[in-house]
Image (cartoon, rainbow, N blue to C red; front, top):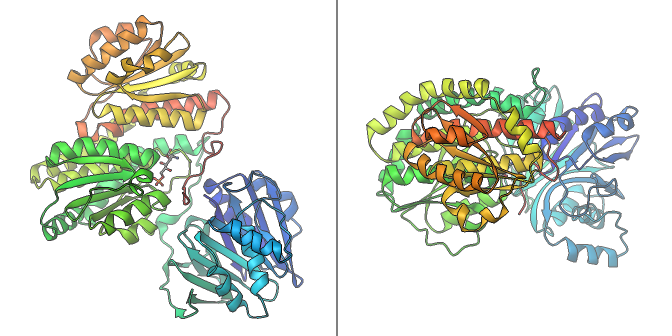
Length: 596
Ligand code: AGP
């Protein structure tokens, strides 16, 4: 989603904002822009494309106060005109979110004589501010936010105000102070090196930042307060450190993510917290595990493992479906929301919906201060570290670990949790071996020249097949599907020909024999096949039948996706590179989707 930033009291606003925007670029890269207060007026620079496109134009900009934006287009195609900031009259605005009632507001404002220069929903905000401005900035901001429906994080400049205003409603914004300057940004890493102390704004709050001081009020105008704390070291923005892309760097960080997630589970007493809530609730009748995209795939894998451990119904659902469905979830339900960012609108709203139904809500997230943590009864940390590549890799493996530990704790067998924690001590080494030993280049070349790539698996390997397919599609744009191995012959096999490649995942010996039959059926129809399997799991015949054969170290079923996914992530990465795509910033995507 879009990234926004504001600053005041710095030496050179444009340079400070530019630096922050570089760290926010993973949130969207359709266009970028900066507005600064200089010589009593507002100067705006905005360009279609990446943040770097701004560089030549900002060299000459002066001013110590400004706002910046990096855009993931929702309303209006990527263009200079649709880029933020939107400036009109006394105001300039950057916006992250969606103004749902923008069409009616736009008509009203146009009828009153406002001229619109963009197709965005956001531009109504700047015109509303001008409409309500009679010299009282606070009144204008309050009147404006009360007219808006939807989700909005805003940074606002007014030519008569020496600082900036930040507004938070349903989209994240963090304010910071440091070295006499004041800041606001969509996430903490963008404030690193700028702010020393930070505070996470709450929904319905407005911050007025000027002359070294930030004051807060709510949408009714009442004064509000926020507690500042030192910017956490964990929020340090990631750097490439010699790797060509964040995607491969983050795959290499999987062992560390697994280790840190397992140790946070213990050090933050998660098993005890889960036992307490389980007791308080008198046990659970069923479990729903929910997420979007990759987080849904880890939810699905966890549901397989959870049902086996808990022996009660455990199902996975995509958050976008759950939030609008008439669900039978109730007071006996445990609802587990899985989200790397903790800000995905569908997941946060699904968790709120579950809460309204009386369910107990657990959040499994990589971002400690995210919106989902405010909804949850218990937070289970993923400690994958900042993930920059739009394609999730290390956070997926962290989620698999956090969810497996959650279910092992809830099943109330101390031996299940103990043996999982013991296994986790060596899982990192298995992942490291998979990362260094897997030879994926030939498979990646085959993917790059395929008309379609199909990933198949049974049991725990099916969610991994879905994840392998998503990863390949999102970074290389090669089409394909993830499928339960047994389902292929019920329709999709019609697509198999010599131009297609099927990747079979096998981490269970018994199920492996069944998946092997599917591979036979594919090869008999001229399709090419690759097998990714745990050592010793695939039937011998497969080694001869499949064109490509990749083995990784074996581990227990619940944790298996954290290892078996690695070759698939590597295949997706190499395919993207072979095809000349940017794996870190795939087209049309953004890292965290904070709108519907
Ligand atoms: C993963 O590679 C994708 N970029 C995407 O599916 C992502 O997992 C999804 O948008 C959910 O994000 P979250 O984990 O931050 O909620």
